[in-house]
Picture 1 (cartoon, rainbow, N blue to C red):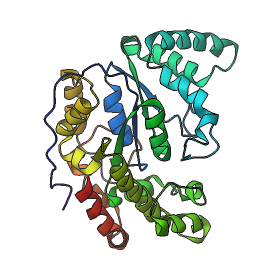
Picture 2 (spheres, helix red, strand yellow; picture 1 turned 30 degrees about the horizontal axis):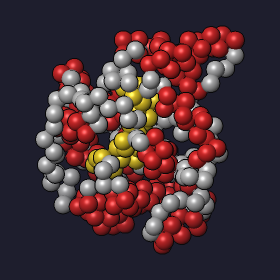
Picture 3 (spheres, rainbow, N blue to C red; picture 1 turned 90 degrees about the horizontal axis):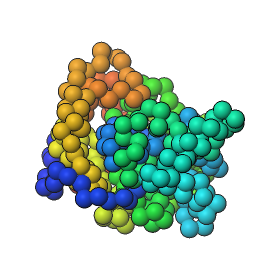
Length: 325
């Protein structure tokens, strides 16, 4: 099976039904979480929060480690701060936080929710008062997603992407893998052999490609395990989305009980049919491009030997993922 072997989406409705459940968008880094999160964030029904788990993001939670696996035991220590983020879905709370955050910006550093609310009031005034639910987009929340779902009755969107696309993106940006942060952590994955491989991995003893291959396998295997445990979650393959972005995003909006307006549809069409970037150009968060061309772009960016190794070590798992999702 290939990304082009389309799975028929469920027929969708054009309007939402008024849900106030939080939304979590997560998945392996460089799998399209930002694109999907931003499209969802265009809805006036949503208060969009960008990567609060990411210690490299401008506004983030104080957490002891990247990719923290929150659960019933360690989640309590961070519950109060995350409660405040989730409360930003309520207009009254959001206005209070925004006004307090604006005042505290002058006198000192406001809390995270206050900073986010004040910033949204300044830059998204038109939709600030309309939002009735939170959307948190963050690949670093991947291993915390089940706790977030259970604790806050969140709806979760999990992204998956072809290994060539993920790895070529990392290499083009000259980013190291996340294995330095992940190795040695207690990662909740049932595949014991893979778990041991992750725990024993020492980035200094391996190449960048070694780390990226292991990272992709870890997130993909964990995604398949989530699919079994959480069949009600939305699992979205980036490569399929790129081929028919409007069709798949309409389905996502319907399942999230969000209205898919003509304005959102029009912007999505413009952003996914734009001219592709010039040869060799790769920008971290550029989303206005020919999405269909993006599916196979990794083949042009990668050295043939690197591409062959990626497919040799991940091809079987990729096929398994496509069949499952």
